[in-house]
Structures are given as C-alpha cells and as structure tokens.
Length: 313
Image (cartoon, rainbow, N blue to C red; front, side, top):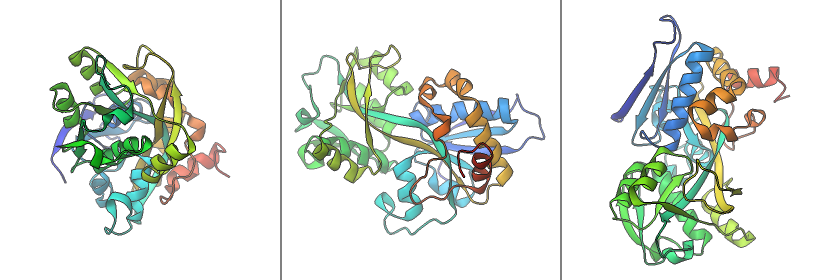
C-alpha cells in the first residue's frame, strides 16, 4: 500500500469491541478527505463503528480492491473507469470485486484565478501556465482537460506545469508557479489559497450543447449547476455556471453485508450531522443515494437497506 500521508483515528468515542473500518481519501485538505472525516465521525457517533481515515496521494482504489481498506471516497466517473478497466485504467482489466455503496454529494468543481487576474474566461487560459500530468491522481488532469475542452481548448494550448496531485497544484498556484487553480468548491485548500493570494475568482463554464458534449466526452455523467454567491464559497460573486459530478462511496464485495448496511443507514439518516462537520453535505440528498452507478454493482448490504426504506424495489 502507498505511503499514508495522514492517519486520522476516531476511536475514543466508540467501544473497544466495535467493528473497525478503513476509509481511503486523497490528501488532507482535499474535498474527499474532508468528506471522509465527516463520514467517519457519523459512523462512530451513530453506527458505533471504529473508523480510520487514511489520507494518501492517490485515489485508493487499489487498496479497496486488494482489501487493505474497506471504503474509498471517489468521483463517480473514476469509479466506473477503475471497475471497468477504462479511462485512466485502460488495459488494467476489470475489477469484479468493486462495489458501490451510494451517491453522496455533488462535486462542484471550478477553475479559479486570482481576483486581480486579467484572465476572465477559460478561453483566456490559452498560453497560460496550467497544472498537468498528476501522476498520482490522473483524474485531476482529466477534469482540467474537460474544462479546457468546454472552451474549445486542450493541453496543447497551454503551458503544462507537472504536479503529482491536486494539493501540490494548489501549492504551486499559491507560490505563483501556475496561473489557475482547479479545486472542488468548499475544500479547505480553496480557503487557504483565497487567503494566501488576496482573493479568488471562479471562471464560468459554457452551457451550450456543443460545449457540454466536449466536456462529457472526458467526464461521463458530468452536468451543469448554477451556483449562487455564498459566504462559504470563495471566488463566486454572481450566479455562476459550473461543472459537477457525483461523489460516491465505493467498497469491496468481501466487506460484510452488515457493515455496509450500517454505513448506508448511518449516512442516509444523519445528513445534519454530516453537514455540521463538512458544510458541503448541505447538498446531500439521501433519497438519491441508491441511484445507479455505471459499471459498478451495488453492494448487497446497501441493497438490503435501500429496499427496506423503499429507495429500491
């Protein structure tokens, strides 16, 4: 297993005999890590599970597939690509043990520039310095490329500055090495960058059918959301169209049904507790947890719970 960057333990609030589960996320400060921390707290408080949040440089699919971790927090299209051996995982074969627990909250993602930048649109990133490669987190390069494609550009139109993962590119942005910062709205790294550079401004995406066709060719399942100004969201001063896709919870078929059942129930029943730890959970729609995920079967434990509460037939 890759070197863990952070190991957050939620053990004191739960009995010593409780089931222990591991949740893999991307690095501390990332959107998925903050999500994982909120999930872990609810699992301790409501499901009486001992939850270990493992923050690391990459997505953590391999750890879940091998069984060295029980769950990971991921975006929907990357989960599909990994399970089906497509996209960034082309040629690696299908992963038949991967299972889906449920849809969580939308990743509302955006390209951010400094508030005083002369860059006003994504089109104007042509010739500018943009983070690239993301060898430890290939998904990020794909999402950035999808934003460029939305404006009719690609990586050949910008100056590529390699970064291993999303947190490093945030550091590069704050130090002035790149001209634009990609991140999910609400992430801790956005607030840090906003304070560091004296303010951020989000670049809006185009919503025409052709622009979204180019976007969805790279991010299957992507959709547009209109985001209004909110004190919790840095860089948005007027209603702004952004790209979004679902965050999902992924597990392994070998994780016991009763554990996955408890996890699904705890998340479904405790939106306000999740929101209290991580504000973006305000967008969580528990009734949408059971919607299908292409290429990834739902875990039997989740199916059992969703049938009980009539989210599934």
